[in-house]
Image (tube, rainbow, N blue to C red):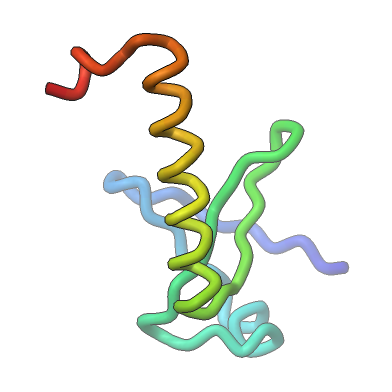
Length: 76
């Protein structure tokens, strides 16, 4: 594993180094999933169908939490 340094722009953007993009086959315009696990940023390549499924599952979880914690008024 090679660790490469990247800088965060003033807009919060980061450039994934070309060597990593090439190795993983990441092309401009593709969708990536970004998460946090144990204090680390995890970026995963995904296809559109996987992303839509993730959005549906996340939306259900968020809606369930809103109802569970009676936060409905916060979203009006």
